[in-house]
Amino acid sequence: DLSITGYKETLENYLLKKFKLVDFIESGIPLKKDRNIYFKSLRELKRKGYVNQLYEREIEKYCKKVMEEKNTIYDYFLVVAGAEFSEGFIKKLRKLNIGIKCIIFIWDKLETTSLSKSINAFDKIYTFDKKDAEIFNFNFLSSFYIDECKENIADYKEREYDLYYIGRLRSVERYYYIKSLFEYSRLLKLRFYLKLW
Image (cartoon, rainbow, N blue to C red; front, top):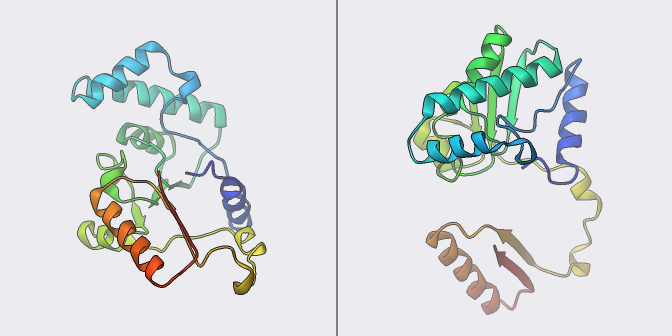
């Protein structure tokens, strides 16, 4: 998610070298602080398979409001990470910005995101996951990092850990993979930090 310190600003600064104007839209749905009880109820009912049209109408209204506030015509719409932009949002975006190219770069496995229903609304789809690239015929693009990450790299002998991993525990498969990594690291007497959250 682009709320990670520095990512949004670094990406924006890079894009400003290529384009005249770069705007940031945090989400394709109202932010938590802006969600009224009606929207929350619709969203919950939609998750259960009901009220799809009513929900999409609310998303279209939200998109229109966002675009009116921006008051700009866009050539490209780039979604990075797993921000939620529904098919309704993309459709409205296209109506308001004729000829816009919609591009997404997925930072997660598709099955763990809420994007599966809206993914085909994009013109170009990139993923860091090789399996998803093969299965869904997406474009493979390895993850990127911001240059500031390199600034504090210590010399190998000065590093606290030989291996550092932090990630979300979202599958049994990942748990066993990290468990074997843990056992392998102990066997090799590596200094390691592994955390699943």
